[in-house]
Length: 363
Ligand code: SF4
Image (cartoon, rainbow, N blue to C red; front, side, top):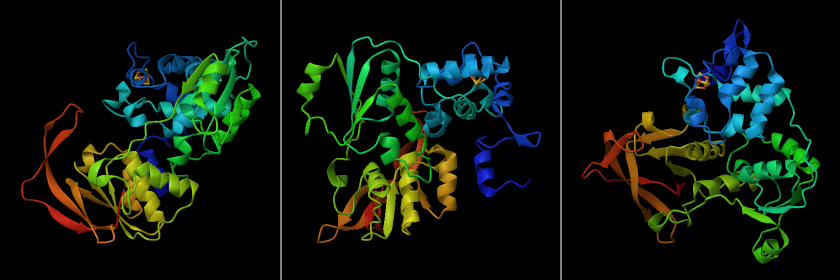
C-alpha cells in the first residue's frame, strides 16, 4: 500500500510506523522498550507517567493492567498522546540517542482507545472542592478528587471545557472531540460544571472560600508583551489571535501581510491559521531552523502550506502610520554564538544590520 505525503511527514516522528506491512500496535512498540532502570522518558514526563512499568506490563500481555498504570497518573491519555510536547518529554527515550525512540504517545493512544476510564469511585467523604477554570489541569484534579469521594464543582468563564487546548490550538492540529467523552465521564462521577461563570465577577471568590474545603485556581499564565509590542491595532498576541480564530471564526480582513514572531508551536499554529485565511505569512525567528523549539513536523507542514521563514532575524521595533496602524517592522540580523543555558546556540545582533520590512500585522 502506498504511503501518502502526510504519512511520510508523520512517519518521520513514528506516528504511522509500519511493521511487517501493518501499523505497529502497543505490544510491537512496547517490545522495543529496554526497561531502563533510570528511564529518560519518565524523567521528562510532566505527568509522572510510569512508562517503563507500563511497557513491561504490555510485554507480558497484560494490556488492561498497563492501562491501569497509565490511568493512575494520567486520566486523559487520549489528550496527552496528542498535544503534549513529546519531543522534549517522553520521546527523549534512550533509544533515540542512536536511532528511533520508543513511541510512547502511540502506546498511550492505543491503550486509551482500547480501555475506557474506570468510573468506580470511593464513597462520599463529605469534602467539597471548587475548581476555578476547566482547563486540562483542573479536569485532572476533578478526576482524582471525585474518584476519592470528593464533591467537585468546576467554574469556567467560557462555555466549554478544555481551556487553552480548545481556545489555543486550531482544529486542524488537534481533534477536540475526545473532550466530550471527558465531560461525560466527569459528569458520571458527579462533577458539576458551571459554565460562563467568572469567579470575581458573577460569583465572588469569598463565596467559594467559605463554602468549600478546598479551592484550586488553574487559570493559565497568559502575559502580554510590554512596551512597543503591547497589543494594539496591528499587534495581536499569539494566543489572542488563536482564540479569535478558533472561537469567533475571525478572518482579520484588515490585514494581508503578516509576520509571526517566534519559533514555537504557538507561532506555527498562528502562521498556519493565517495562511488558511489567505494571508501572506512570514515567521521571523532569531536563531536558525535547527534551534526552533516548535515540533519539526509542525515546521515542515507550515512550509508545505506556504509559510515563509526569515531566520536569524529579530524584531527590534515597529513603525506606525499616522492612524496608529502598523506600517513596517524594524528588524535586525543575528548571528549565532556559543551554546547558552537552554542548550541552544546563543544569538547576537550584527551591528549596523537594521532594516525595515513592510508589515500590517505582527503576531
Ligand atoms: S527511555 Fe525508552 S527504552 Fe528506556 S524505559 Fe523509557 S521508553 Fe523504554
